[in-house]
Structure formats: C-alpha cells, structure tokens
Image (tube, rainbow, N blue to C red; front, side, top):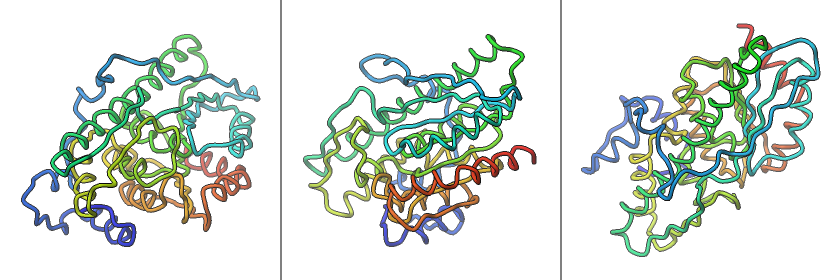
Length: 310
C-alpha cells in the first residue's frame, strides 16, 4: 500500500479510519507502516548521525517590537521559505511575541547518497534513509527544546506560553517532531507547505538542499511503493507518525494544490494524519503559496491569537 498521487484522498481517509484498513500483504512491516500505534521510544530522541553529532541548526532570537509580552513563536524555515513570510513574522513581533527563528538547511546531515541498484537492497537503503531522517529530526527537536530552556532560565520573567510552532516548506515537515518532543507543552501550530512521508518529499519533490541524493529510479512502481512502506515502518519521527502529537491542539495548515517543492499529495496525507484541521488550500504552485501567505499575514496572526485564547 504505497503512495499513489491519484488515490491520496481515499488513502488519507483510510489512514484516519484504521479499523477499515485491510492488510493483505504477508510482510508485517506494511501493517506497521500504516497503523503504527506505538509511542515514540525514548531512544529515538538520542539518535545521532552515524559519524558523530553535528552542530545544531543555526538559530536566532528576535525580540518583540512591543512592550507587551505575548509568548513565543518558534519559526522553522528551510527550503521552501522566502521573504514573503517576513510580514507575518513582523505582525507576530508587533503583537509582543518573541520569535525563535531556526534554519533547517538539510533534512539529512551529513549529506549522503543513497541508491538502490537491485530490489533486494530496498530493505537496507530504506532503513538507512529512515534512520538518517530520524536523526536529523531528533537533532532539530532537541535544539528547539534547548533554546526554550535556555531563554526560560536567562529571562524568567518573559513568558514562554503561549507557545506557537510554525514552519514553512521543509520547516513545516519538521514541526510535528518538535511537537512530539514537547509533548503537550505548546498551544497552537501553523504548517505552511508541509507534507508527510519524507521519503516521498525527497523522491518526488524539488528540494535541492535536503542533504540526500536518493536514487530509486531502477525500481518498478510496486517496488518503489514497498520502499516507501519499509521507510515508514522503520521511521519513528517522520511526520506521518508524529502528526498525532498535534491532535487536540489548534492547527492551521496552508498548502498549494500544485506544490512542486513539497509534493501536494504529501500535504493531503499530512492533513489526514493531523485529523483534518482547518486548512487553506491555494490553487497554485509553491510560489503562489508564498504569495498567498504574504497577503494573508494579518489573517494568520489573527487566527493564532484566537486559537491561543480558547
């Protein structure tokens, strides 16, 4: 049961109604990839790249442009983000939010090349990709928590809550892992141009700085689908699994119907895994999405304000 971009709506519905999913394949990893009921194991947060820990993502704190202390906005930006988001951030700053800006330069660090030359290599390569992605997601989540802890100690009078998580493009793909690390310790989330199954994002999207050169072109469509299933079964922190940690929180999802950077059908899957929260779907490309975000900065900030008051 792999990702067919023509059948994503029915797939997303099936994922939300797990009791209706019939697993007919003998390989139990297929069932795990679709249902996956287990909590994130503690060991997942300790994952490091195989050749040693890398430096955390670059980050900076932006002081609020208002004397009113309103909370903290964690903003994860990576490829797929642009200057169009600046008006949105300025609005949050003027409302009194301190902003932690963190740049997600790579989905996999250190960069690597992964190639499947023969079908029997699917297990090993899919597992290696899952471990590399999980290690990076864990690293970013630890870095966010470390920054929040640090600022809470250094400026104890400045409120951490309400805490809002937001991301654009690759950054939006990382937000669910941060939410999982924080548990319930945040108040709302905004995901702009995100997707679930980072294998699909890497293999079918146009990200240029994801840090992995993945070659699966030699696989037949069923073999490629099985690669995706094995990847999800081996992953612990892919947004396909960690989206559930946003359940019960106000979530706003914005994505483009024809997004080519983070494939639009992965956004549909993420929306389903999130429990179908409020969504704005832009009828256009990724560039159109960013332009829409720029125009709707006031609306996004107002939605967040209303959400954290609930």
